[in-house]
Length: 457
Ligand SMILES: *Cc1c(COP(=O)(O)O)cnc(C)c1O
Image (cartoon, rainbow, N blue to C red; front, side, top):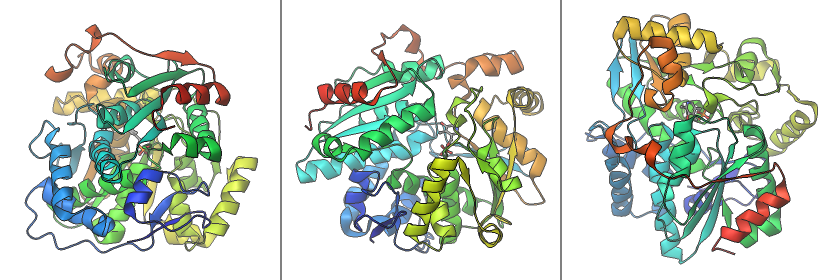
């Protein structure tokens, strides 16, 4: 399997090179040269079996089959539920797909526990080192750090928006006692952090000197790992189902679209957003205009430029990287993305529906779920269950539960009067010392910091 850039101007690479590169050299995102069919899963009896079979279709010969199985069983062995990603029924036709049983309590562990191990495996084989830089609105950072902590060949620098993550999210990043892990607060919002990361990658000399790599959701391997739970969940239900996805960078819902494309029995998707509703406006009103990011109770969705949307856009453009690059250039300069009417008919209508929920509606939904089922859901998950309730048709609807409620205890308590407790392995989180510093939203300053901690340069 070879991989091509969505901007059409970077070399085609194999899986391991794509894994280690993150972003393509032309600023685009890597996608497989073609979408494979789902493999025969009749003998898959566990999450790990399905993961190995699905991931093999993308990895090919780049990872030996036995090694891939070890990587998957080690990664999903860190999950505290025997099913890894259990499907829990909450009413006559609604299910929650619980993706938060990993070490940092958010769905990003599903990808990053595996991707961190894949990095280590590939670098050890090549005798190389690299530096991961990433931006986080909260959950990616802790999941990325947990995925590579203690890794000999990787240093990781994670930028987060100062004051805009929850205390739990920040502490999960800043209390990791591993010399290769650095969580840095930036005076700015998540898009500023993401822009700094993109700028570091676009500085070719710096990128090469530091051997920069990314593990934020632009990394193909993350999207790939997320395809797996759409396959296990859709196959567990009778007939085809609707998946409802709380969305920020569009990575998670894109993984679902890929699973559907590979043949998983998925009818369509509901995209749920908070007040930062660029995707909802695009899907419902053909209006993709970037606005100011407003902070909400679901900070991991406080995003106005959804970087993974580029992968769908590439498909909408008939996989023409030149047109995609041009269109994105216009979006960057004008703040507005325009697509043709027939592209909407072919790719959006019938496949994606969308709804947005502000903080008040999110709290009301957390309260409603608790009153009706006794369950606590986090604010991200609640935007999804609200959308599932408002937009579902006759099919079963699977809402993705993207974070554990104890990651956002204040909002959950406000909505229900009940304060969710951290699971035992994180019970002493608030007693652990923090290690962090704040840097200005300035490229040169951030680059200087990365240079000072990287062992790759
Ligand atoms: C990252 C995250 C999201 C958004 O996922 P994307 O792949 O960026 O769309 C939603 N909920 C939680 C809890 C997250 O951590």
